[in-house]
Length: 63
Image 1 (cartoon, rainbow, N blue to C red):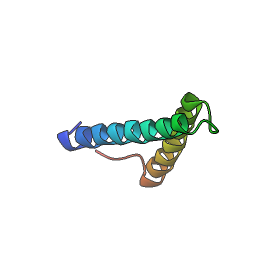
Image 2 (image 1 turned 60 degrees about the vertical axis):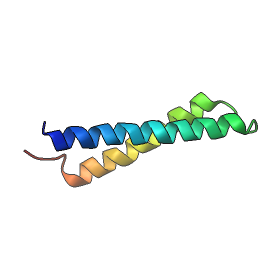
Image 3 (image 1 turned 135 degrees about the vertical axis):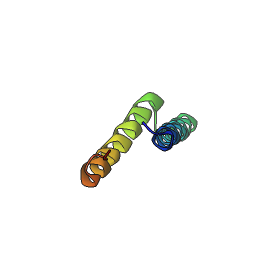
Image 4 (image 1 turned 120 degrees about the vertical axis):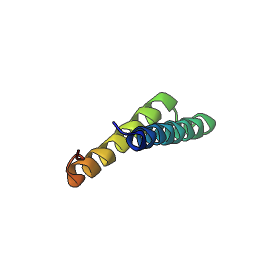
């Protein structure tokens, strides 16, 4: 893997962690929403689904 690909993957991981953390914090601060872990898992699942569509449309990368 090239350095650029590794940096993009690292950035993507950091963004996912940031988004999941924000969702879990929001759910934790608003008791009516409950279960922060479930919200975090749902967020990760939604992001994974969007990334899967992007990879599928893009052809899965190249050499």
